[in-house]
Image 1 (cartoon, rainbow, N blue to C red):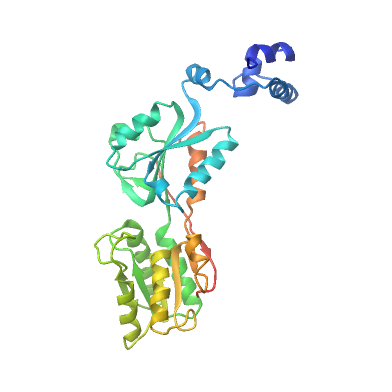
Image 2 (image 1 turned 60 degrees about the vertical axis):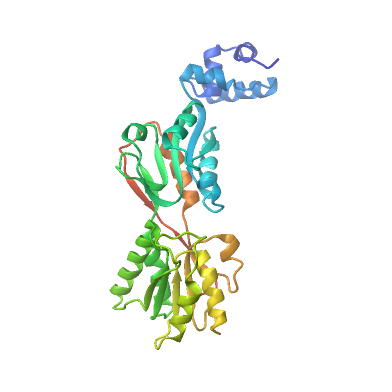
Length: 332
């Protein structure tokens, strides 16, 4: 038999309401000494919160539900869940995720999440994109992570792609590079915003790109699509004005650029500097030389999302752009 609130109240000499307040954050007022004593007695008696009963009483369980839009299939995007989980545990909450994939509708996954009576629900995507939620469903979602709600009805946390590209371009310029090409990710929002930041920053310096080229032969980037990187790098290095830097749409593209440059006998960074985005550790840190890249703010997005979901008062919906972090290694 597990200890009950009444058992703890009898041992502590207080009411059951006071015990509940000390252990579950109720409205009962008490001193810090009393609160600490109740928690100590609960631990001594081996008290375990009856989550089902608690959920019935207050209408929700200490859970944050996540609609994971292919998120758990991406090893580096899981940093979102880590950030969310760490912040939630500090508030004595737990996180669970339901994967949105395989043709399942948002409505069906949301309904499945709601069955667990979570305190709040987040929608998190594997990559930065715009998501159209039906108006009636948007009311159930407290925050969008790594994606933007198309109708701006939900607070959305997204990486600041444009500024990240601007910062990386300024870094290349500060390193003395002036002939910069960009092998980008076609057809996706991150690629579009990164290209804008790249072009704007070069223009402010009175320069133009050597070239902006798609990394794959499809209209929309996919890391399983047929690559164009080798062809592009060979053509760039055979041109009259060879690049002294190549900016890559992500670390996978950078890995291909490394290989292509070596095939034409070019040294990194002496002949050509290479910069990138995402900071996929298993790629960026193991390349030779290690890759200078912009780290996505995934963990920071998760932590901030928890704060928004657990806030006592929800503010109006807004778009928040979180900065990348420059990770300096040896490729520039």
